[in-house]
Image (tube, rainbow over all chains, first blue to last red; front, side, top):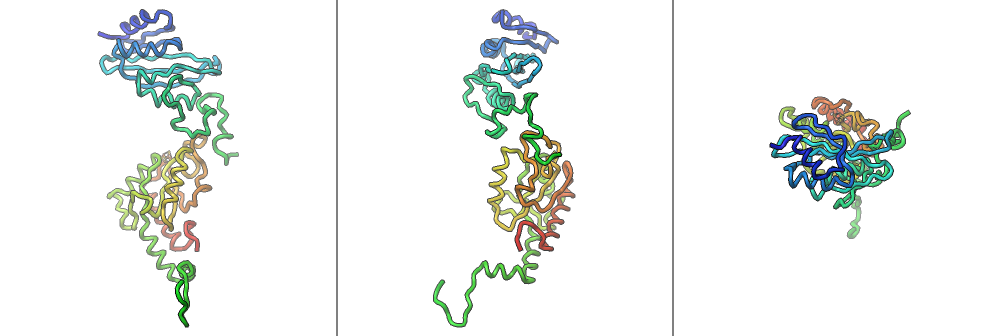
Length: 159
Length: 169
Ligand code: SF4
């Protein structure tokens, strides 16, 4: 039976140096930080060997105090009930990470959206362009916490 | 123009139309127009769901001549029913340009009037009335179907009073 313990031990055995602050919250919940260079191979390992065949979400978080951005992956499975949360820390001035589209196909639009809203560059993404924003807004990164949107780039009839 | 015939005055269709605007004939034309306000089924936000249900049989808008249409070529009224994102604005303009005159716009919901809950958003367009000639504003979040029907009736009154922005008299 595959549970959170089993997955964590398999991951740490295969990638001994890449996991930190791992936390098992219950049989079905696992959270961990991953080194950014390892994330592609970690995802591949999970898909091939651990039956984690469903990427349910990929998103970004901004931590201006730590001068870091985080990419968060929620990976689940159709075969067993474990949901794995993987987080990757990236430096804020040069956030670049390997794309996982070739492992999980549905990461495509998630990565495009995270790119346009946070400015996280995905290496080897097949088609990295804005998804929901107009092209002119590229470079504004509206969901970063230091975005100076209001009032300059939003409503013009205020005050 | 063909050969001139003695004692016959030639005219053009725009001259006729200009002449009609100054006579009571325009009242009859407007009476016809106001009773066939076909609107475009073009939902854009949560208000769009109210707009769709307004067009369904329960509210029986046919009795006012208000019928939902699927194509901009067949529609007289476009209901801006929700938030307009910056990405969507060019498409909306295209749809508006495809509609044959005379045509009118109704703004439905707080989003299309002033931004509503998305007032300070980075990706929505404020002040739609600066971009389109809007005749009727219906506040609410979302307005009930009855309010939309009320909005159509206000538009009919405006057309009968020749006060609508869509046509120039
Ligand atoms: S006005 Fe309210 S109900 Fe209508 S589109 Fe905006 S948020 Fe949705």
